[in-house]
Image 1 (cartoon, one colour):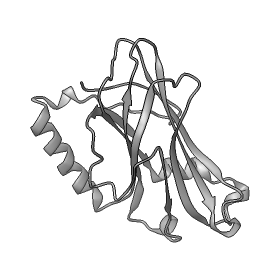
Image 2 (cartoon, one colour):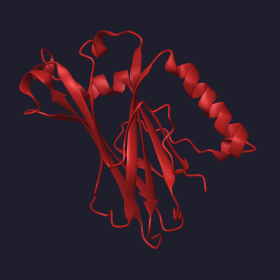
Image 3 (spheres, one colour):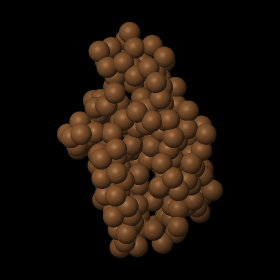
Image 4 (cartoon, rainbow, N blue to C red):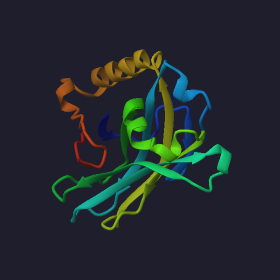
Length: 188
């Protein structure tokens, strides 16, 4: 898993599913868990923070819906919090990008009662946390990531580093081991 935040007001076209809102729901191919080429899910959002005088949180969650129960038994598999401190003002549009590996999703999803179920949809949302007062999510996007997409991601990374940063270390990627809490890493 990795996260990063950088200035931007548009979701990259690479994110095949996009919505002008704080949540997005996509249908999952029923065979996705058996597809060896499937690597995970990338999600992103465009957000702005109106007040940099206090600590704030950007909270996201992901929920699976069971196709054979028509959404009556959703199961959350991820929740994360991105914290901004007052000394990290984000007063213009920024893009938040996070990647979840297949293994991480699988580890957090499957329990004994889910082994025989089919996951038909995935809903990703950026929700209001207890400290969320001035962070506004404008739009979000998601992409199922397959092995062939890794080349595209490397090209995007190279293009970004050559266009906006003299040194790739200027982009602070933030790894998180458990997906629960991340501290902010951002480029202004």
